[in-house]
Length: 413
Image (cartoon, rainbow, N blue to C red):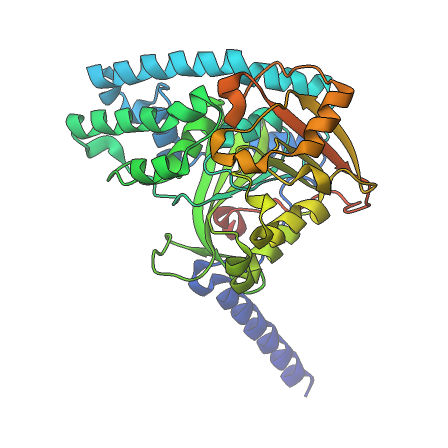
């Protein structure tokens, strides 16, 4: 009788083991996304593990190649005249933008205590498009970056078999698509729609990967996913053009011996659309200790039909850094926020002349803040820039953020 009980117990354990493994292997997807990679480990152990993460060789090689960096996979192509032209022009533009803006921004954020090494949390960047350049310039210490815009993400091609004429055109288009953010500090949405119709240059990922590589970071993993009704990531092989689900791409990368994640969504975040896609708001809410950053945002958060995303910024973030095109100044000029103003504010561009904020101008005139050492945004053409830095007085998230997740390959290990 005892033998039978033992046998039954063993059988039950085997059944549970088989069911559990079948569920984990279902469709190759992983239902839970909020798993800590490094925060639960001692700093030196976590740092050592970050160094040991294998590189996504295809994606990393592609990023380095388009960024004008030496890459063995593309060594033959890098000797071609069209590529040497690309590399020279990219290096010139990169040196210029580092000197004129990025280096000054980095020092300014330190001097003004905008960010520091304790900001190992999440950056929410509404209407960013593929702008990892300034996301990382202002907030290099964040562990997660959530970017979204109307631009389609595209794919990561293997360029080794492309002919020289096609590649020369690709690099010319890539440089052209970068010109506005290099000169003015922002992308033109309509222009990018045209740029990304190219067969190879087919989306925002090319620019995001370009900037990750130019910053000297290594790409660990690249995956596409959709969000289920609970805002949980479900991995899928590619972005589906006919899907009504909220879809995104996740890039995991190593930056200065830290593992980080960037999430990019092509998404209309007007109230009408988000009402039909509540999983996106749930996904964002799952990330604690968020910082919001906005610039050149077309004053969309001034409109009543963008109240959902505006309320997320106001109610879920511990601090906000933005120019005048983000949340209206009046939403910060109250007892809920400690506010600092920086820069010059005398006008808006003609296209948005009805969005001029007299209360912001009055406050700027009364305190006369010093001029910013850099210019980005719509008013860069006038050599003006204004930034609103608002810190919430609410105890929004008292716990440390633990929302960076393992990649699919890590979970299988």
